Image 1 (cartoon, one colour):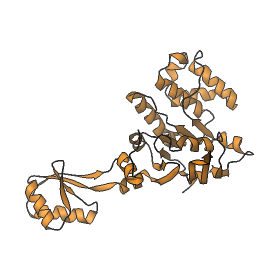
Image 2: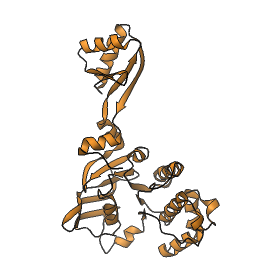
Image 3: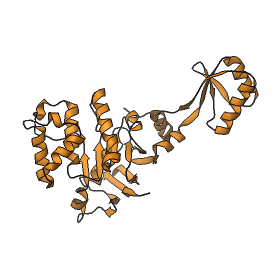
Image 4: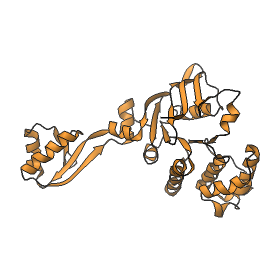
Length: 304
């Protein structure tokens, strides 16, 4: 697997206390990497170090196969877009005029403006003054600015923060199109665990500056499998039958909870019920939510 972002023991100390503590990030090419953690966990500090806005106390950063240092930082940043915290803009200018300024700063051709406006679906609002934009439109304008220059990597720090449900949905849809349609790898930080669950292909969970989990989203959900919920036409008989057959079962929310996620055990349990003429009405897998996984991994509730 090719990684476009790699860090080795990346560390940032403030007053001798680690804000980021020996972080080993591995962001695969073409992924949407969800960087999860509560407020103050070290997400923003990590992203600022990747962009060269904060100098690391220790450790190594590699982006697009090149070590990040003072000599090649600007060359690497040309292939990197970012939206960190709230986007900056000139309220008295139109959206298009703001993007013209970005093109000048990035030394990018003005044709880029039409391309990025099309990506963020703002062609019809481009000539409106930015001070008249909604918060969601301002976030989309910030995303458009980060896409100028056709970057290979996009770093987004809490891009749905403060948006209403429709704005969150719009931003989520936009982000999900970037790897497939434009070949952009996205690193997105958030404390909104349910949001990352709907966007990411890979996940890193950070707590108190330390990476406590890193893998694909599917691996995280595999890790979260709890068991099966059953609803039958005779739950009393089914419960006793499974219990006497050696299965670990309990009552949960008016259904039978089979405490296994093993496929062979599931087949044996269903066969036991069918042979006893117990009708199975519903059967579905129960998984921990990402909030519950965070609590399981860290031993404490995530602060939303």
